[in-house]
Image 1 (cartoon, rainbow, N blue to C red):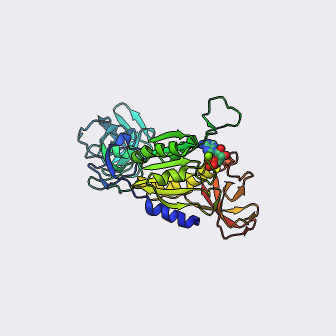
Image 2: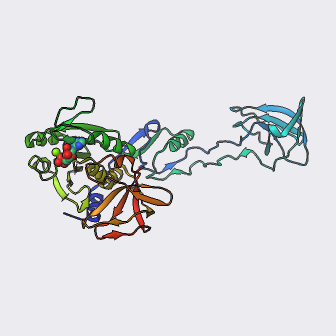
Length: 390
Ligand code: AMP
Ligand code: MG
């Protein structure tokens, strides 16, 4: 059995980034860039009006004759004199001679001439060329997460393909004779299978979408066989249940028989002690406890950073926040505790129902409070560390 900090070190040391691939920007949401991107153009590519109004040469003059129109998409270099203005619209090319745009709300129109009632500052309402980025400048450094806004920015620069780190292929192998799929009638002695849906949802929050779920009965031969092909085809294998010490827990033996190297087994924590971590070639194996709250806790603590490492994220762990405890915590277990909790702006409440089987409390929690194994008591009002999971 090892401590949480050691287990985290081992997971980090074994989860290297996947190889890279070129993909279309339109499919790049949630990927991490594997290259520095330079801009092929300046943005805006020309001086643009930021308003619907009139472009003119700033002076002391307030009265102008309107001598032309520049609509979005036009590129006419209308010659201007000091007493001339051009009717212009948002996003339209600002003729070379003009330096300022007045918004139409500040103008009185009289036939072909205008009177500016509220004079803007010189250069107002003109977006300069390259205001956002100049041609050849860095758009994004490597390891940037591609968000919707990043996709928009790449598209507005005309970039259609980028190189990103691959996302991992993940398999979830569910063990347990007692499990029935939700939607089916529940026979006596059985329970609904919930871990696979929960783990899939948790993976989706990090952007993993290549997930296959397999199920197997509590049987060594079947587990061994199922693992054989799953290990070959996936970057990460999550196993639910069967990793404890019961007579029908066959996962560890099946993994070892399949040539998976054990990197650790059992962690000095609560919940989530019976967990196995290993690898075969570049495939990582997390055999998670079957108890649902243990399973999800260990997902957040160990699987989450490993997946993020594989995907190329630079920040791989959940962020940590600090809040004041609104009740005392006693830890006489000698284990690291991960307590389901609800935090707000200032304080944190430890929820009722901390047993490893309980999802009722987890389902309303927005954080896990960490109590280190060597801390026996935390007083009400003291600061604690929380991993936000909302
Ligand atoms: P195990 O780790 O296989 O000994 O399972 C521990 C507990 O978790 C038992 O009460 C199981 O019935 C329950 N359990 C195991 N797998 C699942 C699952 N996929 N969904 C819901 N509960 C499960
Ligand atoms: Mg079981």
